[in-house]
Structure formats: C-alpha cells, structure tokens
Length: 298
Image (cartoon, rainbow, N blue to C red):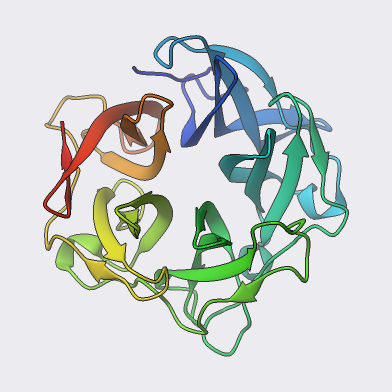
C-alpha cells in the first residue's frame, strides 16, 4: 500500500493516517490541504477501500466550527457501538490547539461535538496544548493519548486523559490520567520530540507506538508498553521502524504511526513517509505481531 492525494498546490500530500472498518468497508482518515474560503488550510480527508490495500478518495471533513477556522488535522478514529468517533486537533493556534470530537453513522458524514474543543491539558506541567490524539478502550475506560509541549514550546511529549467508555466524550468528560508526560524524549534518535501516539491493547497491556524526533530529521517510530495505561516502559533503545534507505519513498521519515486491528485479528501499523524532506507525503502500512511481550514487524 502506498497512498497519497494531490490537493491544492501540493502534488502529493497525505499525512497522519487513521483507519477503521465499518461493515465490510475500510475508512482512512488523514491530514491534507484543501481550499476553504479562498485559502488553503490543513484539513482531514477521507478515503475508502474494500480490501484495505486499494484506496479511493471519498471526501473531506468540512470546517464548520469557530475552533476549526484555521484548520484541523491529525485524526484518530474508533468504532464504538456502531458509530465512528473521530478525535482530531485544531490547527494553526500554536499553544491553544486542542482536541476536537465528531461522530458519524456512515464514516463519511460527521456531527461535530457542540462542546468542541473537548480536551486540552492543564498548564501546570505543560504549555496546555493538545495535538495528535489517539484513543483506545482499556479496563472500562477510553484512554486518550495526545502530544503536548513544555512551557518553552520546544520539547514535544505525550500525555494521557481518561473518560468513561459509556459517556459522550464531550468537554468535561475527560480527566488527566496524570499531570505529567507519560513519554518524553530520552534517546538520541528521538531528538526533542515524541509525538503521534498510537495505542493497541494486547495481552491486557497497552502498547504505544510513537513518532520520535520532529518531521524529516528523520522521524522514526518507537514503541512502549504499560500495564495501567499511565506508566510506560520503552521497549527498544533504537527505532522499531526506521526511515527508508537513500532514494526510497520514506528516506526522510517513517513517522506518525497508527495501529489498526482487523476483524481477522491481524494488526497493521500505518505510518507516513517522505523521501524529499517533506515536499511530498505518502501513507503506507506493515503487519506487526507480538512475541514474548515484544512487537515485531512481520
């Protein structure tokens, strides 16, 4: 699989994948640029597939709320009780960017949460920003992982919030799991950035994949695990999934992961890549498995 769209002035630009399956159809949500009010703005595109390999563009999420006026992006998607819940970020507001929520019956048309934005962290441990959401059900709760920054807006790190799995996920539903990062840069390859958390439950643990280092420096993918959803242990000192070799489509980056478990139990790691320092962006995937508590690429 290698997917991208030509949008606006960008010949190939699709980032930040999220995938769900509704019935027999797969839905891919991603960041791209679209015209809105005479300006190009970051938005969220939708593609569909019958097999999870060949994708066709199927629309975009319209910008309809005040908090979306500068753009939106970095979607996460989950199917709960037959409905697609989309968690995504506002864009272009620097410290004030936050997590938004919308719901769909068909995966294409979404009803925005009237309380948007639904979550941003307190500012006693970070800058108060929240981007790059991902959600996963765990022990009767919905865990929301997000990227934020330190007070100087230099270091990117990951935090967590929790809501009742049977709630409406509106503003006020979320409580911080801890007023501190659950993952932050540690190894040289991670630079000053850990972002794009991607969670999957296996063996009653949350495995969290993440993008280490800022875009095209290069960003590569790491992995961590937690028994309680809050306290994480990194599994490898080196990247779990590296950038590609020189001249390849992802030589500048393999980043911004997303994990999808299909109906047959197979687990797919979706990610973005660039081979030209961010001039173009493509989406791809690889299958992963678990052996003795460690994820591996199959």
